[in-house]
Length: 239
Image (cartoon, rainbow, N blue to C red; front, side, top):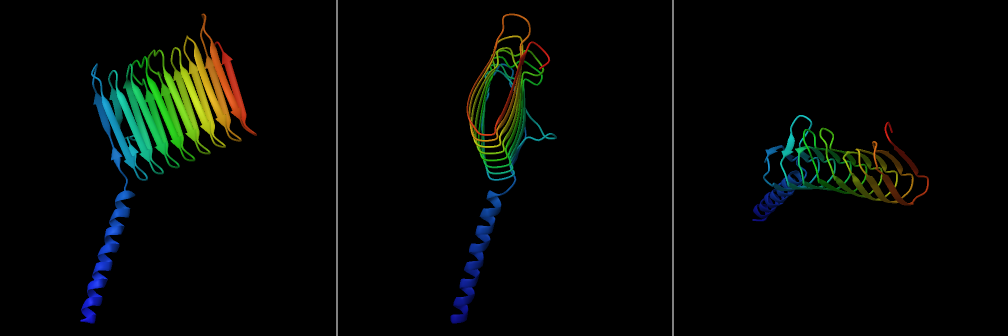
């Protein structure tokens, strides 16, 4: 009887271990989402939540391509080493929100890759370290009134932001050390960057190019930092 009880308890213990192993494997599994969407003038609302590590929303070989007007796209990734590679080919009056919580995440977004993105809005929030964001707005066609809001809490994050937009507005709130932010604003109209930077050894490079006409470039930075580098170039062409 004692031997049967021991064998029964061993099988029960083994079953619990296998269940826990499956749960850990499921949480850490690589999830992938590949999307091609074309909606013309129809509004799209899309919400994506990924929890875990090494999740993927599109890659260089597998697409996330969105086309439409008045789209609302919200992507949340919680975990480490997640990847987003997305193209909003054309998206007038589009709202794109990306939230990243974790370390070593990589996000690449091209808004206006083949068409107009007038009145588009991009909000990015990252909590964690060593994250990389590459964001391009209005590269292929004339875009007007683009707004970009960036909130960073962490260290050693790398941001590359290009706004080829007539009347680009960038707002940053960065809290952390050793972050690297490179931004370029071009287009024949007023541009502005408003930044609140807190932390040490942050590196910030800003290029604002405005063509001929009555245009202005505005950079308003409030920094609480030690050992940081801020380089600002404002010119009519060739920054």
